[in-house]
Length: 472
Image 1 (tube, rainbow, N blue to C red):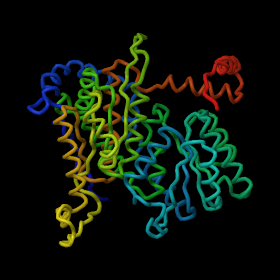
Image 2 (cartoon, rainbow, N blue to C red):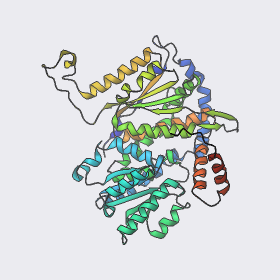
Image 3 (cartoon, rainbow, N blue to C red):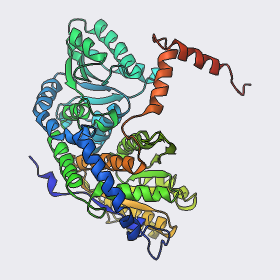
Image 4 (tube, rainbow, N blue to C red):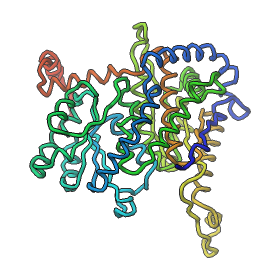
């Protein structure tokens, strides 16, 4: 096993701090003054951890115990199937996508089978757009495709609708073996998907009871998809455990990475920075920004505090990609409203290096690029953007990953989850529910004719009568 753990991420928060270029930054005293509140948050989180409310952390050792079972299953099915399709939404889709993009070849599906290690192509259906669903199923050979249905409750309308479409197709096209083409990831003891799986003989993996979708990537929700594509899930969990120990065993805002990140976010929010930009400088982390956006928005956007008082808190996440979005969004960040705090994510050493050839025949204005590398150019662009933001007195910080490997990604996932948990304590909210989402789910049930929602359907239909439209 590779010793990926010798390298650890670090946090550079220079751009958040007050200095000669940015007198509007935070001071060490600002952070120190928050220490009592952070200590209270840590005590509260320890209590919640013991009570099973933070199982994204508490169950990590148990997840390590499942590695062999998951890898054995993945190895057994990988040679049989050419395609692996995740049916899920929210964290059930964004987590597997983020880890896959970070840790496999960027054009993984286009590689010939032998260059994928004879592993299946990887697809995620995270929406119910009929064109997209139809065109993917039209393209794939059902006899060579394995579908992973992920829903803890079995009530997820989008995922269950996809499942019904896929099951019908498999029953028609592979009538004798269709059950072998479906693996479900769901609750151990309850939910609508469990009895279907038991009756029809689908292979099952368990989503632990105390872990919500956006915190579930390091459970079978994400580990199965990763193992199918030969990602080292043991190292992924080792990285997560190393970050978990760092967060749980250290105290103080200048020692504990989750406390530091949460403190910086909270203090910047108090200064009116109600937008959090997540901007990796690595294409492999592009989808990680989508995963972070769900984690931050769904956990922290709340109407009420724990005492039931109306507070309407939250910080809107925005995803960006360096250097691409230097040419679209950074103009706004530098000269627009001063309402953002920006997190860059950089990689110290990429898996590959790409030299830029020299050519003395080229115009002098571009000859400076020759003899350098794309990594050097990428790093220079990030540092230049960082400096431009500093001159504009805009708050920013940087998470530095030593490598883009499984251990580092495990660390990053746990850091962001723990940071979110701390931010929930600072806001004094429940960071683990999503009542605003539930309203939309219930409305969907009503409009689609689910029993018990007739009253809600009538309310929505009355609302729909009042429309303001512009029509030709």
